[in-house]
Image 1 (tube, rainbow, N blue to C red):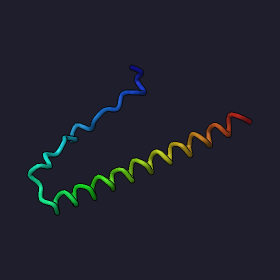
Image 2 (tube, helix red, strand yellow):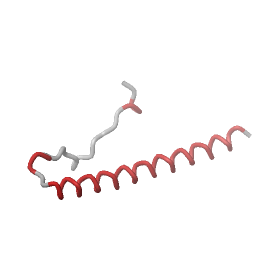
Image 3 (cartoon, rainbow, N blue to C red):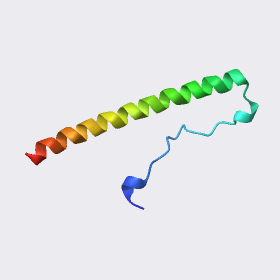
Image 4 (cartoon, rainbow, N blue to C red):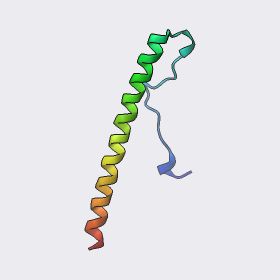
Length: 60
């Protein structure tokens, strides 16, 4: 496995036991996860834009 393939889990990340959560708590949890997904997608897009700009510089 390449070093790039390894994605470290944050030390504070643990799987939640959702069996004991209420519907409202589950909906809040989904909202939290969607916000995190949005944050990660934003970072991905930022990195893609940076990579595209860097490629444009070196292709000249």
